[in-house]
Amino acid sequence: MFYNEVKRAFLLSIFCWLSFNSVAANRIDTQRPDAPELAAYGKYAIGVRTLNVTHSKQIDIVNYDPNEPENIPLYDRPLILEVWYPASANSDGNTTLDVYLRDGKTVVSVEGKAIRNATPVKTTQQFPLVLISHGYPGNRYLLSHLAENIASKGFVVASIEHTDSTYRAKETFASTLLNRPLDQQFTLDQITQLSQDNSSFLFGLVDTLNTALIGYSMGGYGAVISAGGGVTQQAVDYPWGLPKNALTIYQNSVKAPLYPDPRLKTVIAIAPWGMNYGVWDEATLKGVSVPMMFIAGSVDDVSGYDKGIRSIWKSTTAIDRALLTFLNAGHSAGAPMPAPQESFVYDHTLGFNISDHYTDAVWDTVRMNNISQHFVTAWLQKYLKNNAAMDPYLNLVVNSNDGVWSKDENGNNKKEHNHWLGFAKGTAKGLTFEKLSRGE
Image 1 (cartoon, rainbow, N blue to C red):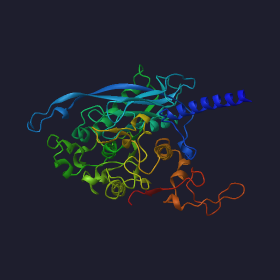
Image 2: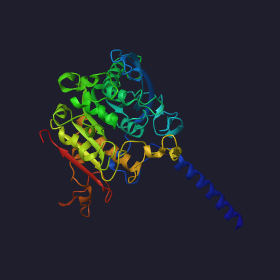
Image 3: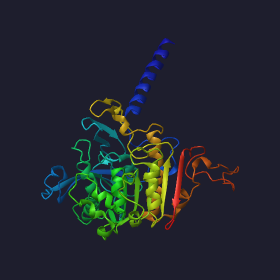
Image 4: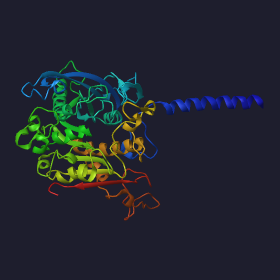
């Protein structure tokens, strides 16, 4: 009797230890029980590799001196790309990513499903390209949970680490303003070249003629410009610390035919910054000419909601577009990875708890990630793979709280059933999904 109780206690302690360590791992691939249908990982194993590329003869904003406006230094701008891709089914290996936290000092390990340097899947099919552009500051891993999820569904995903905008770099907002669209365009060009290079793992794997761009915060700023949104004269004239008229390359009268690139078929902008600072207006946003989906928190105090993200959505009248809103969420709605456990510490230099960079005051981060994965999957399948089966997931009653669950004994929808498709009964709450058509 005593032996059995000791044995049970021992086994329980082992179970608790295993459970704690399983929970304690910084997972980026978590699927909650209430995750919507399309958030689930796809059929492909996932590989991940790092690429280093260089954009030659770019303006060196860090070393530009506004007191010497005629002296504009140039440099070869380095970029790091993290590339997720469909991999061979028998792939095995390291699934850990070593990432810097927001403090720029602490390196932590996060775990996902992607296997480092896995062999690409053997196929005659080419996969669409998805570019990811992080916030300011950030790094190429900030949206890694979304990147590997998308790759598992038959996409090649290239996440850009933007020089001068990372946690470890000397953060330069002026560089971010100038370089986001340039970095996005250059990355598309580089992946295109590699797709034609028979010595590259991307050879024959990726179809860059069929590309999407996902940008978060300042990445969203760049994404709106890459989609064709021209900046205002006010933005050009504002003293950002840039060479005079540097942003004129993004004005509607100048940027054609560079933006949008014809290879870019759709754009997803998560909490795009800029409208609340007069970067665009109704006139300049008419230049956006590829379908867009916006993702926002209704109380975003960085990019703004009514006068920010929602205003961009309303003003891009030349395209079909959608707006997914997390009610009462802030700037971190649906984008950053779950906060690593080591981030739950107050940093006196920064003046805030490091975890604040990843978390939301109301919403659970994994819950938001799952919802974003669901809608991003539907949107990319529709616009990059012409999958009409995605339409019902995007044709929804506006307010999820108004959805009615009504099925007969055989599980068939009754006439009044309008619950959000893909969400289990009672799980579509606190969200709105609005659509506007071209011309509206």
